[in-house]
Length: 247
Image (cartoon, rainbow, N blue to C red; front, top):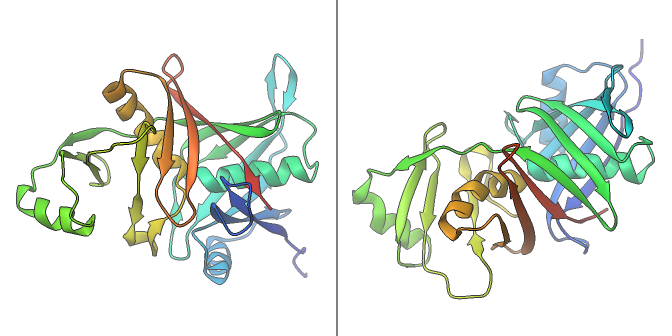
């Protein structure tokens, strides 16, 4: 029996202009597809993330009514990942923009737990889990190489994540923006992630402690320059950030 056609679109997340932000392909599945097929499609799109939505029959109940639920999976051209902020935003935009949901809230069941997207005037808000535990970096012999890779910038301090051995390098900053950062993810087939929502989410608790505030402005340095409003809500241990997208 022939497979049903897959409805899809490509969304530039975290931008109001075409060819900026971070692109994600969003595929709405009406039937099960195997991982080999998903990976092949992601490789064909050949952009930082391709995500797959599957509508679930059960819905969550809230004070405002029934909340639709979707299974959500993310694939780079080479592997499935556990969390992707910009593709989650792209998925929520796709569902809202094409009136595929009647609610102003969507829940996504993912490898990182339940994620929530909310439609508010002029933008969309994601609630993503905190996901960063850091420790001191002991590779003092590599500091000069790290500095060189950053254009010779002075290095104030280096931390390492306890789960994936990612590095957080802090350098001096003289501007009105609270946080300026660059995300480099070489092992997943893209050297620099132009706009990384999950990285901002992970870094929000770190910078909240450093800056002594829960609301701050973060700016990601890339060709697709993007500015976020980060709001850390410690009561429920989530990071909310506001952003827009172009389709």
